[in-house]
Structures are given as structure tokens and as C-alpha cells.
Length: 142
Image (cartoon, rainbow, N blue to C red; front, side):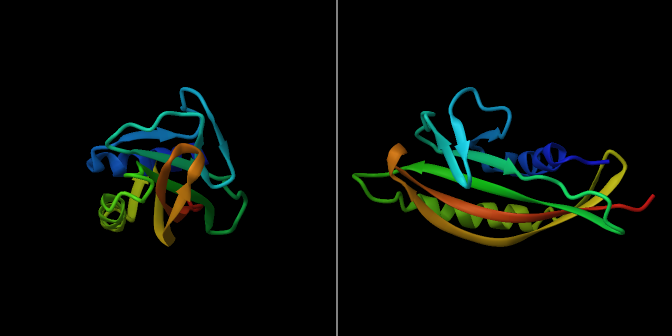
């Protein structure tokens, strides 16, 4: 059985190649998470940060259980404008996640796909972030 936190760890591990500091909901040193907002009250490293927020996993479906995972790549603004590097990081993350769509964890097969992505502003942290919404499914058959 895979929980939403396990699903978050799969994405966490797949994004290791990005070379950025990564945080998984429940493992933040301080600050809070509010809906799809990436972080509140945390300092963003100069090179950027990835925050992964897994949502509740469905249960008792016939073949697949599923959850949504929000991936946010935060990058500080340059002189009040979005850092142009953010778009390149978004492209790299999409490519990385597209290469690792099927796997097995804890003897359970899973698959995931990108539902949507976009860039948003987070004025309280003087940054912009790229949001990637992932549909994560686990095979519910033994």
C-alpha cells in the first residue's frame, strides 16, 4: 500500500536531479502551507527551492487509488521581476517528471502524469514559482 506521503517521496526522489533543495509537506523546518501556495514564512535559497505537497489519497477504488501532488519550484525575483531562469527550471522539471512516469514502490505499481503547469507570483516572499500539478495513481490489485 502506498500513502500520499509515499507518493510525495516518489516525486521527491525523481526531482533530485534538479539539484535544488527539496521540501516535502510534513518535513518543513518552519512556515506553513496554505492551499496551493508554496510556503509562507520560510527563506528561499538563492538557487531556488522545490516544495512538494501531496494531497489525500483515495481509497477502496476497484483498480486504481489516486491523489494529486502539487510541485512548486520557487525562485527569488530579480529587481521585482520574475527570474528568467524559472522558465528553464520548469522545463527541466517537466522533462524529468515525464521520464519517470511508471514505477514500483513497496511492491505496488504506480503511474503519474502532469495535469497542468504554470508560473505564479508570490509577493509575500518576493518570488515567483512554477507550479506543476501531478495526477498520481497506484494499482489496487494484488
